[in-house]
Image 1 (tube, helix red, strand yellow):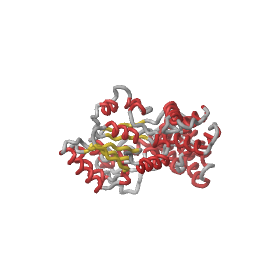
Image 2: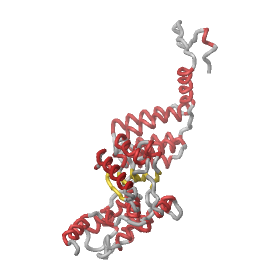
Image 3: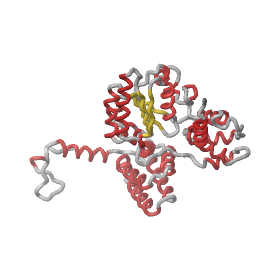
Image 4: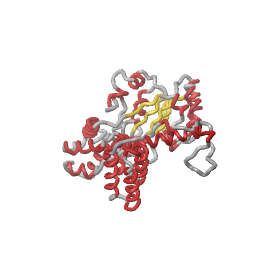
Length: 384
C-alpha cells in the first residue's frame, strides 16, 4: 500500500523546487552540449556507459552542467553514491564515508562514489583526508568547481583524478533546453505556455552560456505573466548579461592578460572590448590604470617616452574622478598605447643589469664620488 503521507511530502517538495532542478537530466541522452567530452566515442561517455568511472574533477562556469554530469554518473552507477556541497561537510563526515565505503567493499557491495559540489570550498587539510582513500580506490571522487583546480585543489588530488573542462553552452544549446522546459511535464508541458520566439532568443543570448540563468528567467516570466510571454517580458526577466568575472580568481587575471596582449599587438578594437568587459563586470578602474602604466614603460618605453606621461596622467584622472567618467580617460589611454610603437629595450636593460648584480662578481662603488666612473681594477670587468 502506498504511503500517502510520503507522496504528499514529495509533491510539496517538488512544488518549491526551482525549474532548473526539476529539469536536471538523469540520463546521457538528456544532456545538451559538451560534445567535446560527451560525443560518441569520447572519454566520459565511454566511462559512464561502461560504469568504469574513475575520480573526476569537473571545471567550468556556472550553468554548464557540472552538477548534472555528477547526477547522471550517480544515476548510471551500480555502486553507492554520496552527494554533498563542500561547504556543508567536514572532516568527520568524510572519515565516516570512507569507513562505510571500506565496509561495503568488504561485503562485496561495490565502491562508493562521493560527489563534492564546489570542492574549491574545501581547505587543503580537508582535501588531504581524501587522498589515501582515492589513491587506494576506496572512494571514487567526483568534484565540481568554478575555479581553476590548479589553484583551488591539491596537486596530489589532481594527479589522482581526470580534470574535465566544461565549456559555456552555445545559444543553440540554450534554446534546446528552454524548449524542453516548455514541453516537458517536469516543466511547463502541462500548462501549454505561449512564448514568442524572440523571447527565447533573448534568453539564449543573454544567458551567456549559463543554462540555469536562462531557466530562471523563464520561470520568473512564467510566474508573473498570465498571457503570452513577449520579448518585452523576456527583457524584464533578464535585463543584462552576467559576465563571468571573479575579481580574485582566474577571470580577473585572464581579462587583464587579454587586455594587455591586445594592446601589445596593436589590436585597438579588441583592447577596448576587454576594457569594456572588465568595467562592466565591476573591475576597479585603478587596477587597469596601474597595469597600463606598467605597460607604458615595459612594452613601449623609449619608442615613445610620452606614453608613460599619458599613462601617469590617466592614472591621476582615474583617481580623481572615478567611474563612470574615467572610462573615457581609460579608453583614450588604451587607444594611444595600442597605436604607439613598441620597444622593450629599457625593460631588457634593467633585467640584464639586475641579473649581473645577482649572479656576477660584485663591483665596488667608486671612491672618488664620480657616479659615472668605475674603479680601474673593475673597468674591464663591467661592460655592456
